[in-house]
Image (tube, rainbow, N blue to C red; front, side):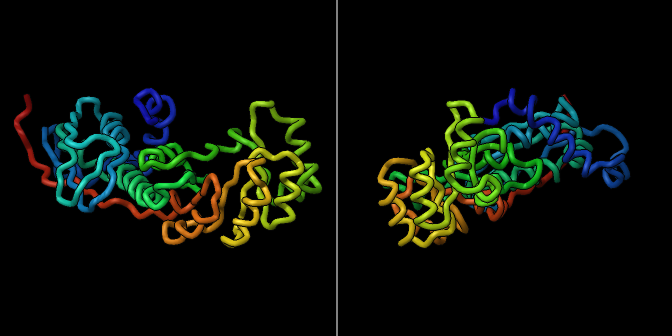
Length: 287
């Protein structure tokens, strides 16, 4: 989970990079109208129903600019929120609130949107064995946040990056000279604790992957009928995963194929943001 240790060790640099993108030298608008420190308060308002995700990142964005900023949260991470609800109240130097507003909201809206879309998709798989996975189709430099959001929404993470697991795709198989050779070479090279997953596009490739001893077989862009035949052919000798243009609109059909996992790039590349706003900024007496 994205706890405070993870934020400071892995996410701080990414948050700072996002802040630098938005403030190359100064926030000229804010500095023009606020010439010195003025303590103020603002409210974080939800404008859509959904799942709130990214509150630690939202808070950290302001804390990086000024550790004196205080945020009171009225909703917990991963909790359902409704349109019109106040999610949090932020108090601090109004220059900091204004300068950090867009970056903090960009993270929070993006992560909440992914968590919301994931939760909607997971709900469609209730009552069966199939688990929902994300992919590496993430926004550059946003993977740690987007994959965390998938978990917050009730999904599961596939491999985090190329160092995290072996997945022999069509080009790897072509480079190795076939499925059998690719699997054999992977077993020779990789530690025994690593599972080997093979992507297949038809029943013949599926048969070869089973005979080669693949641990997981990914059924890529197959029809539901083809997937059903592939699952029967595999017959429990490997775990099964479906991949390829999976969305919440077609996932119910895919579920009927009986695969163990369904991976969907749409969770991270197509989820709309959850609309949130920082409103009602006003000066208050400093304590």
